[in-house]
Length: 115
Image (cartoon, rainbow, N blue to C red; front, side, top):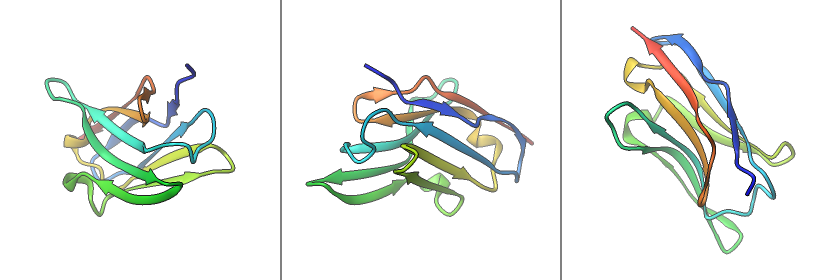
């Protein structure tokens, strides 16, 4: 099974911005859940932001409370690409960020925020 491929991670100072990209194989509208998750050392993987879809229509866009107002998830169907715009980054945002479409996960991209 072809996996999503993330890019855009890196090292940034607190208060800075990054935009993550994820090329999603197949039809970008074929999903129930598609979005971004993250995993920090010693912590469980958690939702960052995700779209949910059912009956061929978008149902919801979910954000973790800790990123609301700072992060925005979006997608470009022409490019089969999912994005995560991250603004006002905090050291607590340091993690490996994963793109997910239903049961398929990317390999992750590292985001490190220095104080």
